[in-house]
Structure formats: structure tokens, C-alpha cells
Image (cartoon, rainbow, N blue to C red; front, side):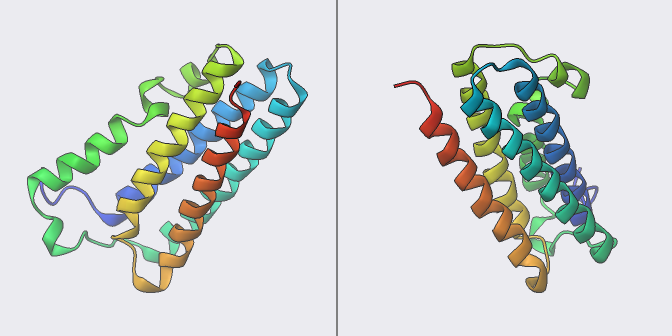
Length: 158
């Protein structure tokens, strides 16, 4: 499996994560009746769109960039694959399944928190593979995902 992954593959995966996040949050906007949650989920859907665009532009700028030599080990490529496959929104199924998400407000918030945590971990790993001049874009997304996690946690019923 070594050598199959490229840094740009990670950026494509990041775009897919953000696309699924946008779909997920829009689904929550449609199904929630709590005005505060509806507003929060709408905000988060827009944030996912913003991040997807950042990663699409980064992908265009980078072209075909190989992973650094120290990552050529099968174990590391398997680890990155696991991060993607185990991500909350990928475990929910394809985009059509994500569109069908149903749950209580608490379940929606907890699922969203899992999504944000998984995304933070993935972006931290991705940070290692982008050129120095592009790292600030990934770091900004990590910081925003952390804010999203705090916002979601504040909405959990006490």
C-alpha cells in the first residue's frame, strides 16, 4: 500500500469530509425544531462549505505532491486510511445516508461533536503534509473546528 497515497489524496479526503459535514449540518437544520440549534447547525454548515473551498484551492495550488519520505511505511499509510474510514461521517455511510440522519437533539449534538473531533485529528495529521507556506490554512481550519466543538458542547443538555 505504500506509495499509493499522495498528499493531494489527503486534501481530496479533507474536501469529502467537509462536504459530508455540510450535508449533515443541513440535515440537522431541516430536522431540528430548537431555534438555537437550528441557528448553530446553519452556521456550522456554512463553515464546512468555507473549509471545503479552502482545501479545494489548496489542492489546485499543490498539484501532485508526494508524501514525505518518512511516511512511505505501510503502517503510516494504513493509519491515514483508518483515520478516513473511521471518521464519524464516513461511518454514517455515503452522502445519501448522511442526508437521512435522524436522532434526538442530544444524539445530533453528540454525533456532530464526534465529527468535529475526528476532523481535528485528521487535519492535525494533514498539517504535516502541506508545504510550510500553506500550513496556516490548515491551522486556521483546525482552530475553527476546535471552536465548533466547544460550541456544540455548550449546547448539550445539562
